[in-house]
Amino acid sequence: MSTESTGAAEPGAAAAVPSEPPTAIPPAPTEAPASATADAPSDALSKTPTTEPTEPTEQTSSTEQTEPGEGFEQVETLAAGEEPARRKRKLGVGAMLLIAVVAGPVIGGAIGYGIQAARPATPLPELVAPKLTYSAERVDPKALAAAGPQPLNIDGDLRELLIKRPDGSKDLLLGDGDGWMTADDQAETFGDSAEAFNNLLSSGFRRQAAVGWSVDDTQYRVNLMQYKPESAAGAISAMVSRTSGMDLSKIPGNDDSMIMVAQEATTYARSTEKYYWAEALARKGTVLMFVSVHSKNPVDRSQLEDIAKRQWERLA
Image 1 (cartoon, one colour):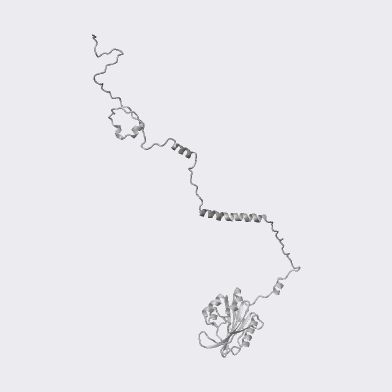
Image 2: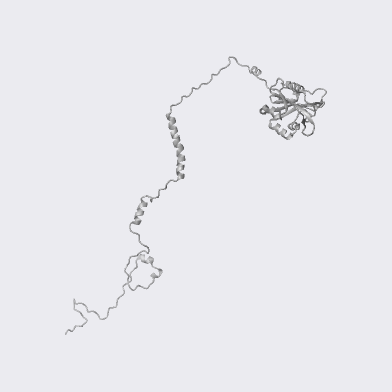
């Protein structure tokens, strides 16, 4: 019998299985990975050590992972400067009309220019200027002015150009009695004084000198009315109110004149009294000679012509 204890084993022999399982010694705690530490809650820093070591495992995202290569292809495309493909826009009706409006004149002008450029040039006539001629002798300015038409000497006092009233006649008060009549004084001699006043001002009226007298039941008035130069040509037509029912003629020797004699009696504007009237008009430059006669009996034409002729001679 062997004297060695049963608990000893021979070298090289297998150790006997113990009757009780050995007590496991807990391993030393290992340091957790940095990623796990960052994602762990605050209570993960507790001092209580873990009883069992855990093997490192791969972290997976809660979302699906993209296929390898998809993101890289897009990054490579944008990095190369390429733009994503876009849908081609078709031209609408409005855009086509706008192109036609803009391109039409341009194309038409180009075609017209080409046609005109292909035509032969039209020869222009030569420039011919008249030759200047000079008199052989020097002209005297005074003699040349004397040979021309003389200016009308009617810029002075028009009252001095009026004829004198006949002896034995009664003087008529016209205007203020100083021989001058304003536009409103002359307008008062017409039935519609407002319209007559507007006509005088619109026709270029400047001033008026007048003389008047009466013999029995007949009144005579001689007026010299001066107008603006640009309005003098129409002075006669502006003073003629009507020609219907009138016997018309001209002053002997004066084509730019008119004599009107009423054939029927007319009623005054402010009364029921009837009268016959006649007028003689003639123009000398900017001055209009206006002779009027009012009578209860028909007016003697020869008498009116005589007054108008004598007044015209003073103007001439």
